[in-house]
Length: 507
Image (cartoon, rainbow, N blue to C red; front, side):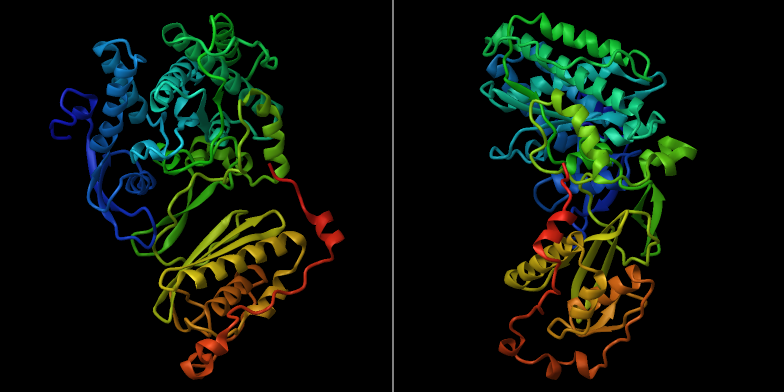
């Protein structure tokens, strides 16, 4: 049990059993002591380490109380919360929402960063219940999020950013295929419920603080029915409630933002309405390796997980966005990552079988830590990235630029084999012994290791022999002047017309 102190006394935190662990926000950072609810997973621990400023110990109750009490006190001062009783009920509701992993403000609020854009996210799978979906609890959470955002904006913001996450996980938990008509009706009803409850809350604030906007009944027609009992009726009731408001406080409320560490803290596995990348994920193992484990969505989906969570192409996401876009006050500013950001597993990986997602390799080359991340799609390898920890910013920027160029080239039709032929056995530091890759023992450069590893994983297990020790030595790397430019020429891409035909529009 938690120990009562000035931060958690007389709150729900007094009765919450915590566990201690060590977690790091970044694979290369030193782990820090973390205390969080006993039944929360390691992904939440890593997210908590990312949300807490500094490098010392962090406990969820103390960190959360920082922003909860700050919002409650400010809300009373601004008149958003009428009195001390309203402020305490507001704080208690935020604690309950967080403990249920149903919702929380974005990372900027946790860090008390006044320059960060305020956002509030609701984790859709956390509202699953025995009847399907807790529409009443969800509507209440939307209203709470609107009040919190009004306080974060100093009661001056006209545009709020309240959104939801992990629609794919919710649909899997309901046994619905992401691309089915039934799934899209559920998604539209949830968006309508969010819009209606949010605008009704804005209307309530307008009554006490003053209206800025008239009510405009320009919503699409919500679904008449869905496979989830009561959801369509709840959406219609929320819209009717918004229509009866005397005016609105805000011009915009519902918006899908790019995910941050808060989604991971809540247990959301995908950002916004993105499809799930796969039914499995990479996790650390006690022996220092990594293993594939079912995602939370797969556990909810049960025997149908492989079918419901199979990788989807960009057209699936675009189809879902076309259903939801009319309900959004603001469409996603960028194509949100398929997964909510999570730190990569820290142990050295072993080769992972392809499942339409990606892999992470962490090795040491000549004493320099290197991380290779790949992402696969239906047609094979689609994206690569390399991270180096000990080299200068200029060198890292060049490697980042090269990886981006390779990713663009792959999308435009350049074969991976051409990149392997261009970059394998290139020579520049760091070079030398490779630790952490059971198949490659020496490399003449970071690119040499990376592209020979890609050949093993994505070109039918093609084995390219290690360079000799002499070829990896300083005498063969040359001076700094002789090494420039560090990166070889890219293989030729298709002609511009061919590239244009190969490009796909991704929402």
